[in-house]
Image (cartoon, rainbow, N blue to C red):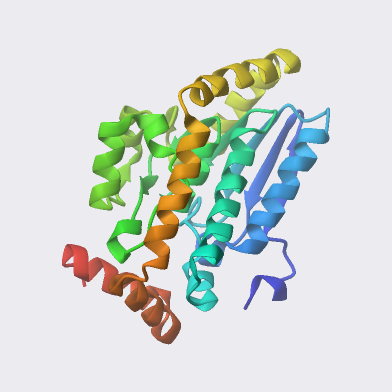
Length: 277
């Protein structure tokens, strides 16, 4: 069943006092980021920015995971693009992440279970992150010949840690390790995640909104002065090179996804790189 065939929207919105909770609602696909969900998220963030009653935004995922990354079924169905096509797609995706970074109000990721690849990008684009103790993070892109869409990781954890995670394709970074690296702010028991995230949001919302907004701008400008935007643009150009190369592993992953399904493609990927059946 496609998202269009469902009665429920792909993004749920709920206000708890001055806090707006946005819940990604594609639980059967572990909230994989497809075009429909990203458009809905962008619209919801714009609405929150324009609503004076909203002071803080929480982003979370419905079902068994926060977000498993970009929708690889949609990628496989899209076929092979040329360099111009890839540039347009990748720049659009990065711009969507930067819209979260640039949002005038604090955005907090509330993360449980899987938070992988594009899901990790999404979490890193948020200002803060609270993770359940069952959360796992990481980038698997290199293991099937793909690149990282939005290179936020080194800006959050530093170059050494980012290189290790990206070069190995590690996808089992625990919540405790993510906290040690600075990927998340807090780790709480899974059963307390919603309560803990809301408490943090409410503590921020109690402060003067104008000062919070200006302070977020000031902190973000530290990245900008260091070349953050230029680095994002450079990564987009380099990722175009990776994707348009149509490496054998990338083609095989797409083929298996189309013909046998995503579960089979992931099994092939993991068996090839880690000896897991």
